[in-house]
Length: 59
Image (cartoon, rainbow, N blue to C red; front, side, top):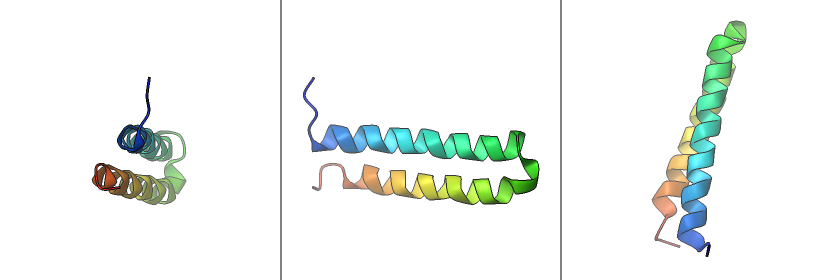
């Protein structure tokens, strides 16, 4: 399995999107009093994953 730069960016974007989803769900389900903080962190993970996805094929 050969990992080039595009595959690494793709896998990283997928993992970061999953982590963002997990943060949002943990905040909503487990710690509702801190949900806003977890949601902001999760949205930050989504933004970074989106940037990594946009970089695929350009670097």
